[in-house]
Image 1: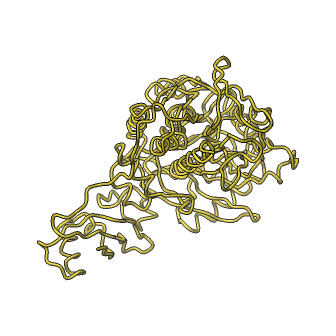
Image 2: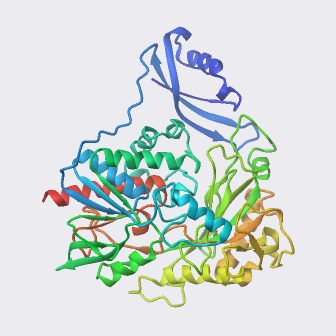
Image 3: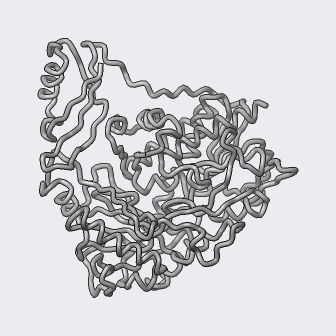
Length: 515
């Protein structure tokens, strides 16, 4: 039985109250049932904040144990399928392979999840970018060290609940199944990723780090083999390419080998940092330091010149991190620990960019959006002194087109440099951002404040290139045996949608190999 009602934030944490309320709603006696949360969300539209509560109610002693819906087999001697990339798409593809009787072999250009930490420390403290091991490349992909938010709107793409259950099976808290906007936290994700990898190996799969795809052999429109680290050629009938949105060299390799690519729309802008207390005050109608409510988040969207401007990857109680993947560029992203207990919040505020509006657009050029992305990242790198410090500006100063003389403390560890971002960002980007911030302040009064700081750029929201595939077979429209997958191919937009797409592509690879 399921029962739903609204409660106050205080009541939502009072188990005795909840039991009595369920008894009243159902007519059951208190000693006859057990219950657990099914869904939980916050309704903060009015000053009297409520929790939308949904519970599963069971006969006493009959509450079922958690079912991860994951049934791996030993695949040591099964047909092989090769996977490029160990982000959520690649890992979930491999886990799905264990279920359907294929042997997954993952090649990840970066390092294992723990070894990445040393390279991230170098990036933060010494401004040294390791092109193979950074916030984007390495075991777990971009999501591992950039927050672990699991919310997705992609309900029609696959089984979201199953993807969440697998995370719980490997160590995430069951709250991610309950909360409307589930979140694991950057501090907890690494161990979960390690446990996924060990499971893949335990059941006969393989995971290889510092193994980079460097060549493809394609004959008569079909994949024949792959080359790893320029020397290791491997026969390959089914290849899942799950390299994420930042593996530019893979895009160029695919193009060189005749695999069809397309330029695609993406989004670019800035990352804005507020004090978390201000966001709490705005969103919770003045409630501050509230033990019964989580740090507040927000979701903002507006239209400027018929183009979308919106918040992206909002991180309550989080920090801003450097996400460059090569020297000569700067990139920002944000993350939060599981408790979301840092004093600042941050969010990308980005502008939709269509390839057709770029000055060098050509219909058959798949790299026009990518070049634009690179140009902005390089311009920001140069403006901030050619280090991993980023150009920054107070929010109201940006709207007023004034350079900021000094700043409140930023969470961005490599440092910030005062720059009028209107002189660095392309005019159509900065113009839309300025107008959007004014509109956002109407929706969240107090948002447009000079206590907030913009960091630029936020440019890796999604891939600027897509790899077209057949809707049914998930196979490249130009090359048999290649399955473009996840964010890098243009078929996902976050951890869960990428994980779901990984499972979908593995099922498609099974159909192909069984022919």
